[in-house]
Length: 283
Image: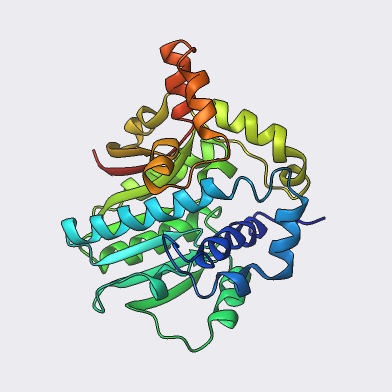
């Protein structure tokens, strides 16, 4: 079994970062990605249907997250970035960050220890720390959020590659817990719609289901789903459109665009909006 735990999906995505980093025209360079992915990450990708052909989607997501993070930090004068379910993310080492910025990775202790072992003595660009906390335990989660929130004034929260694996009830609990901390002002997520989750379930559903990491969250309401929990959409960037801007479109994208002209407008828009990077601010 290539995926045995949801944390293994971080190795899967690290393979795609390594693929992009090896290009001469790379959008970003992650010097740790190949080692973080390891042989297991390569096996996961090779076991997936269209495993390497779909790399574009994760590469685009990574680049757009990079842009949104840097933009929000600068514009909002963020003093703490809280990266929940951080996995094998190496942004504190590879992004151009203010040395005075504080960055906290939160995830299962095992995955953070593995990442620390690979990165070794490499110096991060900012004040970095990691916290091994199981965010499914509400008391531990809320205590961590309260502590971090009390020691910062303007906090940006990141949740990349997380929500799709949670139930709607779990996402609601997380959203409300984040909104309960006054200094948590911004939240960046990736969001799928029902069309994407149906496609992903057909393509990769068996592998992730066997690894106890099924795809679950893709609200038909889109970003409006989060409004009752205290979060207001500030900007939405759709992967399909960003891929064209970044010149990282999927194979055959031009043909799909021609077919799209024959579709009803609502269906065409739903296809274009299957996946998005969303920046929220407190309502």
